[in-house]
Image (cartoon, rainbow, N blue to C red; front, side, top):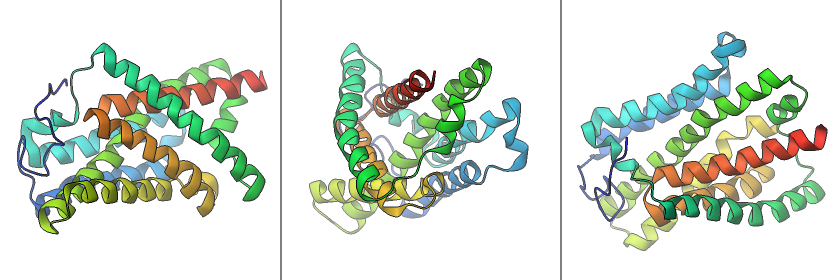
Length: 242
C-alpha cells in the first residue's frame, strides 16, 4: 500500500489517477458514514475483549473498500511512499498541533467547562494488558479517522472545484474548513455534546492534521502525526496518574 506519487496534485477530483464522478462519490461517503456510525454506537458485541478492535478496524476497511469500488486499484493514491522527510513532517505537524491545542485546551477548561474524554480517563485505571490493547486499537482507529476526514475532503474538492467551479485555492480552503466541522461533530458524543469544545479544540486539531495532508498529499503523514499526538496524550495521562 505505497501508492507512489501517482500525481503531483490531490487525487481523483480532477481525474488523476482516475475520475470519480459525483454519483460514484456517494459510495465511499456512505462507507465513511457507516464506519463512523459503527464506531460511535459501540454495539454491545464490540464491548468485550478483542472484539473492541472491530469498530476501529472497520473504520479503515469500510472507507477503503468503498473507495476501491469506484477507484479500483487506484485507491492507493491516498498513500505515498514514506521518506525520511515525511517522518519529519509527522513530528512537525504533531508539534504544531500541540502548540495550538494546549492553549486552546486551557481556554476550553477555563471558559466553557470542558468535558473529559471518558475513554482516555478509563484507560488510566485499567491494567497493563488493557492499556496495551488500548494503544494497539488506537492505530487503526486513528488511521480510520484520517480516512473519514480526507475522503470527504476530496469529495468536497470535486464538488467545489469541478462542479461549482470555485477557484482551486478557494475550494481547498472551503473543503478544509467543512471537514474540520464534520470531524468535530462526530466527536460530540465523546465529549458529552459540548459543541464549543468540539468545534474549538477538536476542530482546530483537525485543521492541523488535514494541513499535513495538504502539504504532503500523503495520508500516512497525517495519520502519523495523529498517532504521535494521541499516543503522547495517552502517555501523559498514564504518567500523571501513575
